Length: 193
Image (cartoon, helix red, strand yellow):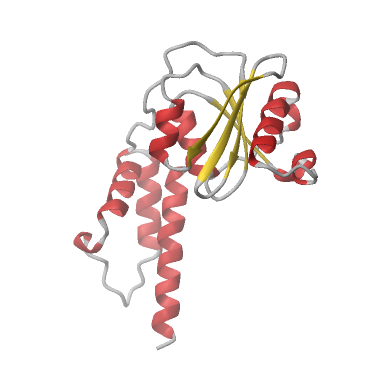
């Protein structure tokens, strides 16, 4: 048994009360079932490594709900590439897969956990920055996605130790918390009737 499977079993027992019947497997949505199956079976998280060894260029990403701005700088801090890509797993995978392994810097946010998982699965070094340590970005008068991505890339290049990393919960823990939150919401609705 994998560690992920034991966590899922633990939380499944913890959220089942004595006076409730367990939810049948057929009642779980297909996407949720796939997520839990991947966690329970310990499915490999690697999705393909880039073909080139680690590059010295650094990528800064300013992530928004619909689109993300990507900026690649070389070791002198000069911009090699800039692009606006959709903030979806497919678009991220398409843009980063097959590229050289690089350090990627982004700020913590709603999308950072899955982006972190995806990019690490592709072999990149990901630094998720605490916004409180990147004051030069969020207190700047120049607030554009392009400028923020450029500043994150340069910060990751010149002072990677200043990027105090945020460590996300594991995929198994996030899945278990989602189940617990959904159950809490259902109990609250049921008790309000």
